[in-house]
Length: 319
Image 1: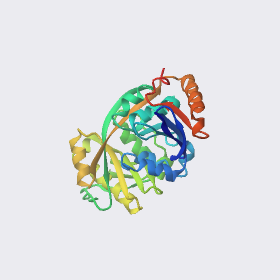
Image 2 (image 1 turned 120 degrees about the vertical axis):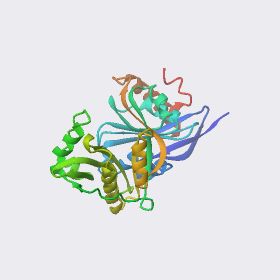
Image 3 (image 1 turned 120 degrees about the horizontal axis):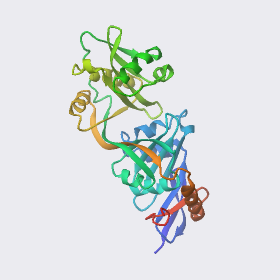
Image 4 (image 1 turned 180 degrees about the vertical axis):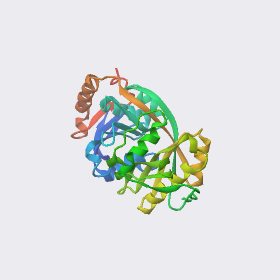
């Protein structure tokens, strides 16, 4: 039985010559519109990848697509905002891509689905896995937080970076945010006099995709349970909506009931499960992926230039 072949061009499938086996067609994708279409089935889940379609981030980012028997998949590797990876779609499709294009020697899985971890572990050492949940809000569901008495809440600028780093350091890890990073992002803080006691910011803001990712929410231990985290998160959300973002997302540990309740009061709604983890390639030299890429390119010639083809069960290629 023969499979209908396809040729991949920037994420779009075109009919090509048939192939006598079932497998995955893999290609590099760089057309923002085609990538947006692939990533938009669950925009809150894919928000970080969508943000990397911005013109200043895309040149430092690689997107790889796979289409095959278990459904489509997309993998992003970027160095624009640190060495990060995002995995979207079918787990077997993710594995097919990572066999050929495993990405950085070491980096961070900023977004993946729980079912991706087993597939990723076939090509990477996976450590410090976090099981989280995406929440999202729109202008229609947003409910602003009341301002707390006795605390000024204001936009933080580049000159506030030392205050921000000192506050984050209370969590037990060094913080080295620079003035330029804070100025470029959207950060709000709650002040007790000159002392910064709560902060929230953004991981990424995408005007072209009208989406943003909120994070880095932290409150000084002595000032917790006063609603300050809700207030500063609400302030960041309000500004992002005023800038024209139609969707704002964040990630929360589902067992952190107080945080889930606080974000829910702001109008954030619960969504897909998300995993984060530290990654290190098993093949640090990269000889295995290099050999598999050569074989995949040879097999993919009948589909067109720059197409790689890998077996559906991946048994031959993962040895």
